[in-house]
Image 1 (cartoon, rainbow, N blue to C red):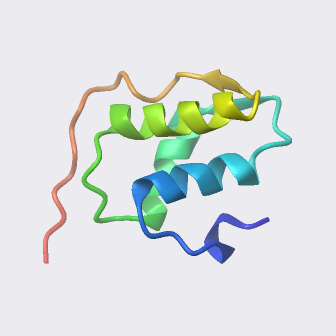
Image 2: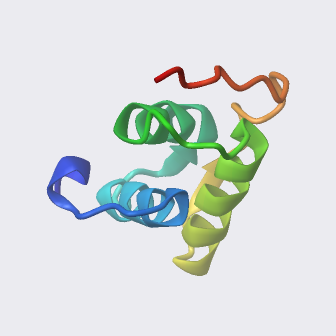
Amino acid sequence: MSLVSISVRSAQDAAEAYVLSRRKSPVLSTAMAIRAIRTLLPKCQSTDRELADMVASAAIQRGLSVSFDGADRGEVRVPYEL
């Protein structure tokens, strides 16, 4: 299932879609998830830590392992300019 083929309306939806698309992976990387979500939702206002928590929660609910390798690089968000 492609992440792009799913209708995504929020960061939580994107996190759920990412986890579903990677459910056969032995370990989910929060860094890769954050990168994918930010690509899909460039205006996302959630911090990296918030996104990592959303991904981890969705993964753990499905019994998947999580590598917390992307949320501790700081809480810097690139502002979206119109």
